[in-house]
Length: 139
Image (cartoon, rainbow, N blue to C red; front, top):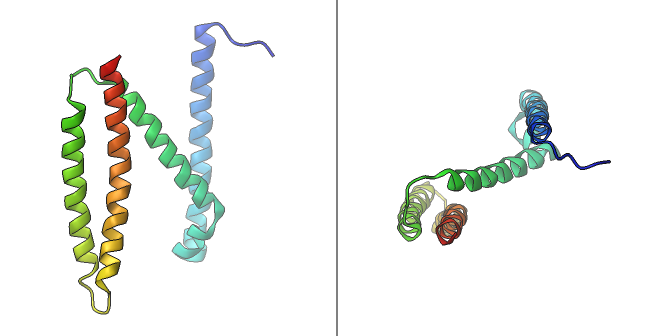
């Protein structure tokens, strides 16, 4: 099979892949929706397609971040953006951690654990965006 060198054909091929991805995602959402209606939330999340859908969404989000950073026109300070993101992430983590441990019979350790998980889930994308901005500024 020959490698495509024509730019128009490459663009058309990328558009075809985008359409296929949308059809696949709609199919996965349809199957998960059917499982939600027939088996409930636990049945839906037990389906292996749930894991495929979540992983696909995460990878798609990270790839979109890469494109968004390349498309930025203003000269933003990567350090300032990281600091703001970390302050917001810490604030949200603390609030959710406190609120989750306020219920009766729920130990404070659960609130700390949930707050820590929220912080890690917010820190990783913030640091990724920081690294992308830093790399863009260096180039």
